[in-house]
Length: 593
Image 1 (cartoon, rainbow, N blue to C red):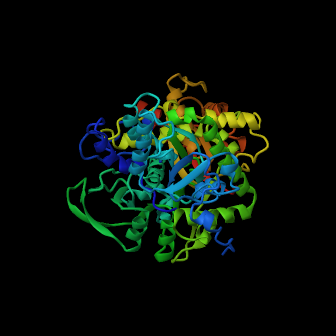
Image 2 (image 1 turned 90 degrees about the horizontal axis):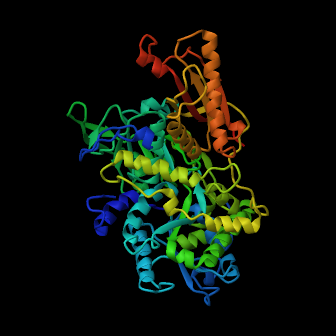
Image 3 (image 1 turned 60 degrees about the vertical axis):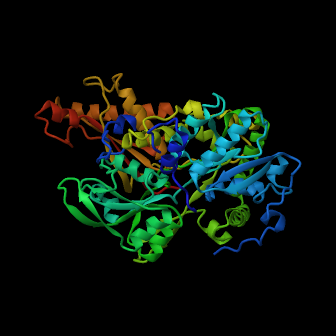
């Protein structure tokens, strides 16, 4: 994936321009809130070879319009394989003759833009045109697309400005083109994968506050490892950071053996430390593997498969005034997504068009790294590189919780990573907009109703498949203090907050197997404690499935009862017994089909 600049890193500049945010500078509340200090310097805390078609021709390559009689709709985007369906539907930079977009009456123009504060400025320019009375402003962006896990901070900056124009001028999410499904990753020594606690004291290069930074932060929170958000210091008990200018620079810092002098936050001494991990995306991971090697994927959007949907953002006022046009754009994209899912030639065509639209790499690159590729690195280690997915209508129905038994995956992603940023930078990002104020899933819902109540007639949603196997590779292990009534498997009212936080975390990590381990203290008989721990673990499983059976099929969840046999602390004190009464969630991977 070509350079994608994080919404939060761009927010630093945007907030100053916006003025109304004052000193505000721009992938969980109950798990992470309060762990970052209010000091100016943040301190350590726990973060919650393919034969491809020829050039499609001058009309496509040069952006010739196939339905120029229709108003032009401008769509700004990164270079990202998740948008392959959108590009195929358009037939090039401008909706081409015979394209799905023209079939649906949409004269779409695709324009690459890697800078997210520029995306915000384009959306603002468009909204200002609407405010002046233009029904279809000739300047600015009708739509942009970014990563879903960065949308909370992006929309906070954008809508703080746009809502000054009026309540209907803000940006809203209307649909999704696809997902990152492996290419965005946290890479480190294999020892970190075997034992996450060995990552303490590690130094990682990456674009701070980017989607890949989010991946590492979620992994840290799940494993209860502190994060050091101050890149000018070094904490031996936390994961530490070196800021990179972009994802390529992150990989190059590791390859070159980059070292820096940092102040030890415990001793105050200056120490030299060298980069031993990377957060990046394709082809940054390819650079690491081919130029130096020695790192494996600790965790990626293959495991956190719901973390990084591509989300399409437009003006609420314009969307509401042009609903048929927006639905036409979405339907064309969804139809193309179906084609790519079923036909390799459609993917090859999309890859060739991507090279033209993005003006980067060639068709072979976009085709090869659409799927996860396993290859040996420079040191002989087997590594996974690349991996994206396109969405069709059924995928959108699932993403926004419109299918029976589903959960609003976008809402979970939006809030989980919004809360992580709040926890790490409480002064800089003290709040973000509620998801119901920035999401309009009604267009997807109407398209689904036209296709049938369960979006029949199109490809099925791309859900993870599990065979009931146990975890082979652990991704994270975390104890949750779920409150139960004494001697019972009935939840106390105060348990609901922790259960909801757990639910959102597990929905984001939808590519993992879930093991629920029940534990008690040593009060009472061994047999009674064994039964109680089992009953409580099953209660958690049932609660998760009651919220969303689609996201928690029986084959995904395993239950284990340990009674009082695996204490975390001494049972001789009330405090120790409280620690021992717990539900432990283990996430991992096995053999998936």
